[in-house]
Image (cartoon, rainbow, N blue to C red; front, side, top):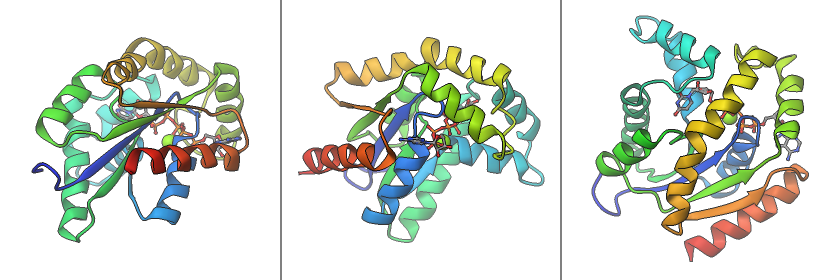
Length: 195
Ligand code: UP5
Ligand code: MG
């Protein structure tokens, strides 16, 4: 995309920190286009004829990061479809979560305006994910996969947050408050950053 053609906010945080929940609220109040990298990968995994189905399934179950070219292609396609319909303000949730993704996306697709990062104690995330796992049907909402997701988050994904933080582009918010309290902080951050 050309400079200024799209605006991109990254929503990052550990597994279960509330990225999807808060993004959904922003969509209904502000009309952003919400792209969850995890949701795009799960949809691609189920798509008939996808050559990446098995690969994605394996990476997600193991809590590993799917090779960047797969995820970036899915994001780029979803963004192009939205832009064709005249929509150009994006919330990208759960991406980038590895340094190569961050560098390649910003060089080849679009530069982010800023990142909202949810700081969340592991115990809180664990309880939420186990509870959600009772009904989510997600293959990674079980204790073995959750532990692997936490390890990947600390070792692989958090460095991306530090990278953007060094550029002064991260707003850190607490996740462990009621949904509406977190959302108030999210709205404050967006208003401050967008004006
Ligand atoms: N909940 C939320 N907020 C709450 C609050 N304030 N108080 C109380 N409860 C709250 O929330 C999780 C649960 O907590 C829900 O039940 C919610 O009601 C409750 P949610 O908003 O879903 O949190 P979120 O951060 O979105 O959690 P999610 O599980 O989606 O995070 P992950 O980052 O683990 O999952 P994602 O779908 O992004 O990625 C899954 C996998 O895909 C990765 O592990 C990886 O294998 C793969 N992937 C890649 O390979 N590359 C990518 O770029 C992205 C993903
Ligand atoms: Mg999510």
